[in-house]
Amino acid sequence: MKVFRCDNALLDTVRRISNQCVHQSGSELINGRPQGPFDGNRHRNCRSGCGRSYLTLGKNGDLYAQCSNSTVAGGMDSFGTSFTLTDQDGNRVTDQEVFSKPSLLYFGYTFCPDVCPLDSARNAETAEILKDRGMELQTVFITVDPRRDTPEVLADFTDAFSDDMIGLTGSEEEIAAVNKGWRNYYKLNDEEDDEYYLVDHMTNTYLVMPGNETVEFFARNESPETLADRAACFIDAAT
Image (tube, rainbow, N blue to C red; front, side):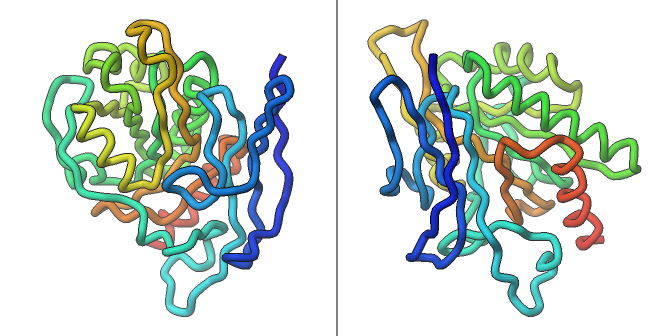
C-alpha cells in the first residue's frame, strides 16, 4: 500500500510557502531538492497525489492580482510556449487555435491508472459549473506519452469526460518541447515494455487565457467548486 503525504515547508530561495509533495512507497521517501524543470519536487508517477500551491506576492498593476494565489521563480510569464500539435481528430492545431478561450490545461496520459482520470473528471466538472454560470471554460489534455496516445486513443479518453475536451499529441520531440515550455516534469519508466509502463509526471492544472497566457496553476486537491470560483475570478478580470 502506498502512502502519500503533503507537508508545508518554507522555501527560503523564493520566500514563499509551498506545499511540498512527499511520496512514500515502502522505505522510499522523495522530498526536498528540485528534481525537474519546475521549482520544487517532482511527482512520482501518475499515482503521486500532491500538487503544488504557492503564496502569491501581488504586483501593482497586475490585472489578475486579486485572483492569483500562485507564483514561482520567474513568474507566471515563464510558463507556456508556442506549439503545433495533433488533436484527437487528427488535425494539426496551433496554440493560438487551441487557446482561443479560457482553458484548463493538464498534462497526463491515457494509460494512467487513477490520477489522470480523476483530475480530468474534476476539470470537466469545473467547466460544467462555469457553464451553468454563463461562463465559457474549456479543458485541454496534452499527453506525456505520445508513443501510446494516438489521436484515436485520445478521442476515446477525452470523450469519456466531456464532448468539448481537447486532446493533444504529437511526436516525442514536440511533446518534450511543450512540456518544457510549461516546466512540466515527466519520465517514462520500464521503457523496455512497449505496452505496460508508467510515466512519472507532475499533476498541476494550468489556467491559460486566450492568446496562450498562463495566469495560474492549481493543485489537484482543489475541488471542482473551488476551482470554478478561482477560474471565474480570472475570467471576470479579463472581461
